[in-house]
Length: 377
Image (cartoon, rainbow, N blue to C red; front, side, top):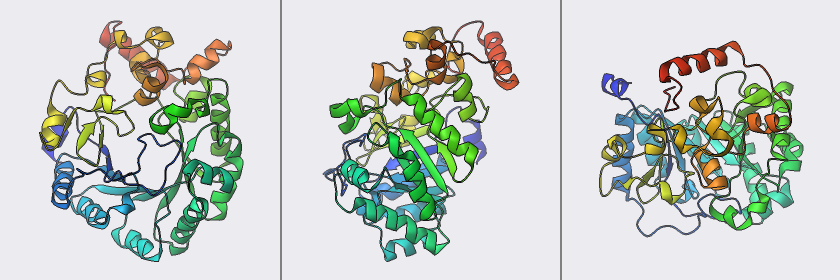
């Protein structure tokens, strides 16, 4: 990382880039309701220039996403440009378009990791994806990568009421195809899920998801990568994060999202409400450096929080957890009902913080004099 980047207070360490809005599925839980390619998507030249700019700004991890990124013909060139610029390239695919030629490209480009969306048993996965054979194609994509032996990949599951009771079976299938890493995220009421938010987990069954993830981590058969919108503090929340402090949402501070037509927001999963500008009107660097942008995280105060979050002792650390989850549930940046500390406390369960978290809380009290503002990681 260059000295110039190191001197920056904020830099986009991790960027998720929707390189196309086109998708060969119509997933029920899609947070952006992707489907048809936008008429104004970035050109090949614009995309290459953006890749160069992101690398120059110190982006360490750039994920090519969609839509379905494999439907954009120049995805291999974009990935290679990212790697040549000194950043790590990732890709998330639904697996439907993966064939032997794709596998050769994956291996040649040397992605740091490739995520394959995988959401249930065959009937459930096909229903969620709204396409027959989507289960077989996703499973086959993982099998081909495992057989290749030179491709790092993982499965990505969006947990909801549609598949919560199938987690054990999903795990078995993943192990059978040779998948050794499993990222699990909680589906939020965004995109298409706004029309069926009864499928979003409730605070009553959310703890079941946490319990299953803790069980799998303890079991050790597959590496569990816990999504940033699951857990937080409390007994099981802290346990889920291996006793490490959870610092909440870093959208607009260390994380950025870019849409296929150049809109910039702090995190790609955020709704359009959080757009800060477009790279055709102003460079990504100018948008990122604008002191009036990303204020919900860069200038965070206790007055930004509501509900239990506002008076919570952990607010200076977690700042209400995942902003997208909170906003989708309560229309507030920091009023997040999906917090194990809140849920446990409501049920009379409390546990003592470990020394690291106690020390951080004490440091924050002294540093901020009792006020709650943005705390740097």
